[in-house]
Each structure stands twice: as C-alpha cells, then as structure tokens.
Length: 194
Image (cartoon, rainbow, N blue to C red):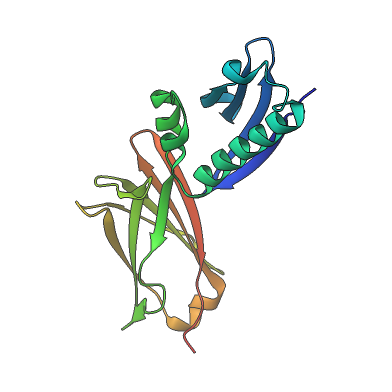
C-alpha cells in the first residue's frame, strides 16, 4: 500500500492544497492542486511499464510520489505552477493570479505638509495598467479622507494628501486595487520619520 500526501502551501495571498496519491487501479502516481476547493491542475506519472518488476515495490513508488509532491510544492513556492502541471486549467489558474499592491516610496513620503504615496499594482508579477485604486486615509479624531487613482502603463499611480507630519503616527492608509474583476486590499501604517 502506498500512502498519499496532503499539504497546504501559501504563495502570496493564495493558499494551495496539494494532494498526491497512488491510483493503483490506473497504475498512476497523481498530484492534484486545489485552490478554494477547485482543482486548478494535476500531474500524473504512469508506472504501468514497471508495475510487474519486483525491485520496484510500494516503498520505491511511495518515494517517487513523495518526490513528485515536493516538486509541485517547490513550483508553487517559486510561482511556476503552470510549468509543472500536465494539463493546467487555464481558466482556473487565471483566477488564482495574484494581484499585488506595492508601496514604492515607503521611506520618503512626507514633505511640505503633503503625504505622497507611489504605488505599483502587479498581477502575477506583471504590471497591471488601468487598475483602479481607492485610498482611505484614516487619522485619529478626523473623518476619513478618500481618493481614487488609476494606474498607468507601468502599473504605477501616485496619490497626494495634505497632512501634518505630527499626525502620521496615528494614521493609516487602506488601499484597494481592482483589476479585471480581481481585488487586493492592503493596509499601510504610517509613522513619523526619525
């Protein structure tokens, strides 16, 4: 009997469930990848050609399955899942592409009573031009301030808010990016420069 493996692995904001098992009736070592309960692809290796060989027993096949499972986990961690799957489900993988919001100038954002944030939105590591950004600037004892921007060709956008540097330690900025039906939200805490 060959034991299977189940592992949850996180890449970006997505949790992948990787399930490997020996399908003995079909003489296959199969690894399936699920996101939110939906199979996004699989990798299967037949052992039909070696099934009758005495030197390749359950222990060796279990080791092969363990190695296959590890390869899929490594591919997920490296962001290269589609390269290792036999037949990736393009529609399912497209829904998994990660939308990321990066704060480009986190070290130098406040000058002349203005908070200037430069952000970049990427999808699966590539620029996301035309992404809509909604900013919610919150500070203590004041109503929140909202602003919007759209990313340019490089996936970048900039927002300026008038604020006193003394108010920064009690402030935060919530940024929501919307791009092709996907949404990513990041909260940035502000602090006074030392």
